[in-house]
Amino acid sequence: MLWFTSTNQPRPRALTSPWVAVAASALLALACGARRGSSDPAPRPEPSPEQVWLERVGSGPAQTARVCERGARDRVAQTLCAPSASGISGLEDLYRALQLGSAEERRVAVTTHSLSLSGRSVSAANPRVVVLANNAAAGGLSYEGVVATAFARGEQLVELVGLDPTTYEYNFYLLRFTQACNSSRCTAEDVLSKRVESGWSAWSLYADSDLEDTPFDCLSCHRPFGDGTHKLLLMRQDLDPWMHWSDFRQLDESMCPAPPPEGVTPRVIAKSDGLDLLAEVEGKQGKYAGISVDELLATASGDVLSDFMVDAELLITRSPALPHPYAQFSLRTRETLCERFHEGQSASWETDRATSRARGLPFPYYGPDVLAAAARSELSTSRGNFWESHSEDDPFDVLTSLLEADVQAEVGFAPRDTESAPDILQGICGRCHAPDTNPALLRSRFNAALTDPVDPATFDEVRRRLSLPPSSPDAMPPRRSGALPSWAVERVLEYLAAHCSVPGACR
Image (cartoon, rainbow, N blue to C red; front, side):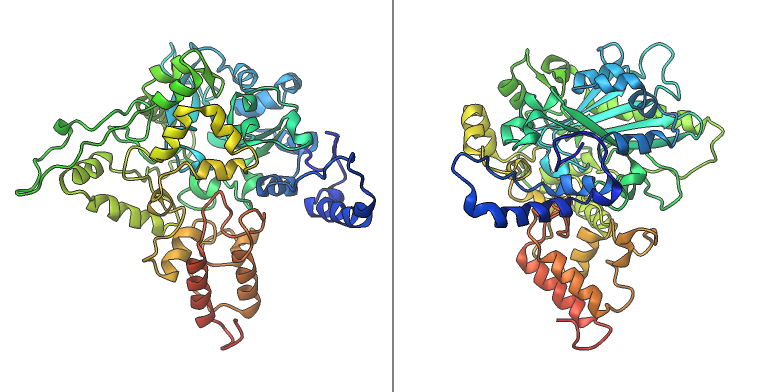
């Protein structure tokens, strides 16, 4: 998948930098701008940060070939490295190729709030659909049969995972596809409607090891016990009731084990509309993520995903693989809901959130619905008007704007205004810039824990990257990970300057 040429043939590695193409385009525009007539085509818009990052890794057949040459034996690699994979031009093709094409072959789980790579764009208006091998079928799961995909509209990406039967290790992948609109400009409707699910013109495959030094890194979360340890499937809410999954409707008071404290009036019971909005805007006979809305409405998402994860982990436990640590860092849903029901706040949620943020990880929202009421009303009233009003907007910005106002800070995509500079550094940057980051990675050059003084060159680079607009691929934090308001940037820079290795040199 090439973003700066009209061909899908591999280019020499020395010429694949997107900045070479961008700079050349800019110079050409300056040289020829005075001669451009009104009938000349408009210049192509600048690539998104995500496009630039993946272009830096590689693209097109050459990138996919590099992945395939490694010889992984999981179903994803075996399927997408086969010659027949060239015919995949949409989600339904992908499902069929992975033997997930029929309701008998698969199970599905749908979440309306996510902490995945697409976490900032997932809501009841744009849910994330996970398609899994049917572990409930006769014979259960085999090692080769452990396969899953995850997709949410808004980006030309599909996440995949398979279990290698020779290493008993999960392999995570990212499939990036293009559409006809990539030759000019993809509008919000191109990637936020059913258009994004078919008609792919090309695709590229990336393995987890390709993405470690990018904002698409899988392993900083899916390898929770550190470099070189076993990779895990994750479910940050793996305890019933499944608050952020499609089948959650409301907290029944009987779920709370104790009555409210004396003198406390219970609050409103937590409720969720599940996939009602999706059914309304797509129609019950419609599709989303290549799956019929009827099938999505019928699934017991939380049970389906947790059951699959247990079965997959049991396979590894019973294999010749060495024993490995296993744990899920989970939201205590019942405690969170009951405490908020009785008292309007949740001490256990705050405690778990603090622990998660200390590890540089976001934490699931305390309520069942992250979609803003105004956005729900606008979409429900007229989806057509919604597309028209956002036709010139960046799709990522459109999706993040749908979230309730406090979601960004409460989840940890942005800092709370009460947080100190060390809190901000650890919570926003710590997942990727931890003291134990693999020293072979570029991101290891900055240590968010600040165990050593900051040299002036590092300070200058941090200041530069914190000051870049979110649309820049070099902006920190990357926009898909979170955002720092201006007050937070100032707070962090003041703190780093105070810890400069050369007094007065960090300015």
